[in-house]
Length: 497
Image (cartoon, rainbow, N blue to C red):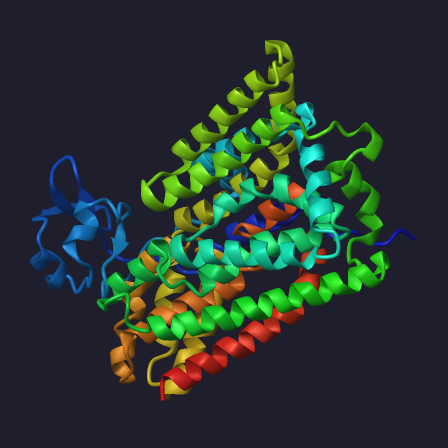
């Protein structure tokens, strides 16, 4: 009898989507009144069960609605989606999602996530073009010679840089761009693709979990909680250092086992597939790293530097990022003197390699759409906020930590979670006499921990690029998750006393 295989990422997400659709038939529908800023009319719009009312765009309006957010956040566009108004939850007529809504959800998700999907496809096209030039193979061969005997530096450097990006400006979807360039380097250094995924994806996620200046998490959440974002900063910096050191040590331990024997790899049975997908050609067939290939690699590397600078300093997002990579592909095509037909074929073939990842992103977004259309998201949030009523400090903060882990499945976005939950959750701090910054930290740690394995988040898209099964990732990561949970629970418990 053949062994039962773990389902693919796409199938797993469709199963989750089906469960969510069925849940809308049993979970009572409910919603909060919402408020959003209409820039065209320069006014606030309050939505109360479909009844819209216009309110003046003043701080007094926000104070009267018990929304602890600065007016500037709305006027500047930092908050552009409707936010929940505390104390306004009510049950409404249910809108269960049937078979047709279930089938339409992935399509709606693909349309809604088009910006991320096009970024992924254009990155794939760029990789396809540079692969034709042979620059990757030449550069990787040169790098492995430089790092010979010191490959561990690659793990330390990559993980720390990714974590730094996560903690400072919320490096997240952008990490998808780094897999095609860095995974071959890790494989050439005699590690496996899991090490590369851990350094890139896990590094960034740990950084976001321990956000220090991340505007999409700690700053927006602190504003929503009505506290200065620097409150609790020293504790977050300390936890960041502890978790990053723990992460690097964990990866180095696994990598050390691979150096002793490649058979210790959790994806050893996929080694030939990985070598074909990411490995280099025979050394004798690799072109010498001449000036032209160096220029190509320089343009390729520069595109990532420009992307990081644009996102962190110029308020760029997916359109600008995608444009940078498209421009890089065109420049590389010119530098390599590639004819038009060869360029188009290489770009299309590279984009096609990541089409499966695009579907993963779309289906995951479709799950969120099912929950929103089925009117169960606010119900879950409301009941999550009432569970902790009357608890003792230590029990309260750790119960909220567990709740945020669960809510992350339904709200995978860090900024979305902050805007939706913080106006509801932060006043709970006053009932147990603790600082609201502790609620911010609880949100960061709960959301960040589950994001490492959240199937509706980035993990399946990341694994999809390197063709690693979700079950292999869970087997690899579970010891570290337990360690993180202990660190974070102890941190939160100590912080309330």
